[in-house]
Image 1 (cartoon, rainbow, N blue to C red):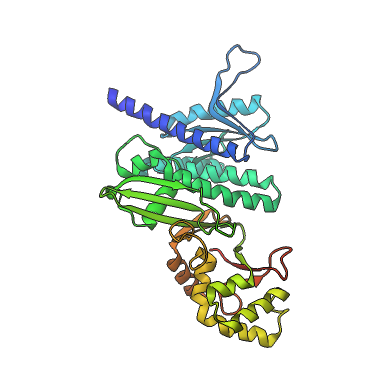
Image 2 (cartoon, rainbow, N blue to C red):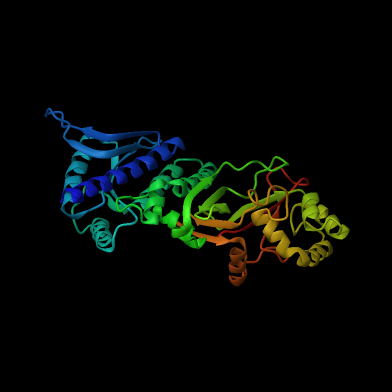
Length: 390
C-alpha cells in the first residue's frame, strides 16, 4: 500500500512537471505573457486563500485560463469543479478552466475522462470546468488562442517555428524516453504521442536504443540560406552505432505553402548545368514570374524539358537533396506535414511523401507538384515554388 501511494504521488508529480514544462515553453515563445504556479485566491470576506489551481496563464488580451493536471478523474473532479467555480467568481479575468490528463492513460481512465468531457461539452451537467482534455489538446488550444491574437502572417510563422521546437522538446524529454522503454510506470511524458508517432514512423525498436537526442540548431547553408532540415534526430544503439534522421516540418492553416526559393541559375545548376535550353527557359520564366506571363511556346518547352528532371526537382525542393549543404545534416530524410485545420500531422520519408502525392493526383504547373511564382519583391530575381501540404 505504501509503495502504491508513493507511485501515485510520483505519477502525479511527473504530470505537474510536464504541464509546467509546457507553460514555460509557451511563455518563452511569447504565446502567453504571464504564468503562475500554485495559483491561490481567497474570498475577501474570509481569511484563507482557499481556492487553488496548479497553474494560471494569461494571454496578450489579458484573458486568463486555469489548468490542473491529474492522472485520475473519478470523484476528485468535484474538487476542481469547486475551486474553478470560485476562482472564476473572484477573478473576472479567468474565462476558462481545464483539467488536463495524460495522453497515455489506460483505456478505463481515458474513457472516464472522455465521458466526463462530453457531459461538459453537451451541457448534460452544470460545470464550472470548460473541459477535461488530454495534454496535447490543451497545448493546441493555447497555441491557437495565442495565434488568434497575432497578425495573420506573424501567427502562421510562429506556429511553424514553434512546432519545430515542440518536436525537439518531445524527442528530448526523459519521461517520454523512460515511458517508451518501459523503464518507469510513473512517467507521464511531454507530448508523448508525438514522440511515439515519430519512433513508430521510423520503425525504431525501443529495446535497441540507449539514447535519443534532437536539436533545431541546424547550421546555415554555405550560401547563407536556411537548410531544409528543421530538426535533427540522433539515435544511439546498444551496439554503439548511430542513426541520424532529418526532418523538414511544414505547418500551415492553408493547404498550399512556399517550399523553395532560388535563382534560375541555381535551378539550372542543380537540375543539369549542361542543359543550356533548360537554363534559358528558367531565366525566361524568372524574368516574367508566372506561367501565364510567359510566352506560350516557351512555357510548353519548359514543361517538356522538366519531365526528365521532375524527381530531382521534387527532392531538391522538398528536402534539399542534390543541392548545397551537408547531406547528413542539412538535407531532409523525412517530412512532417502539419494541418492546423484538423490539428493532425503526418510523418513520412521523402519518398513516401512523394508517392502519396502522386497517388492523390496532386498536380502543379509544368508537370510538377509545384505552383511556380516569385517571392514578394523578387520578380526577375528568384523563382519560388509552392505545393500542397496534406
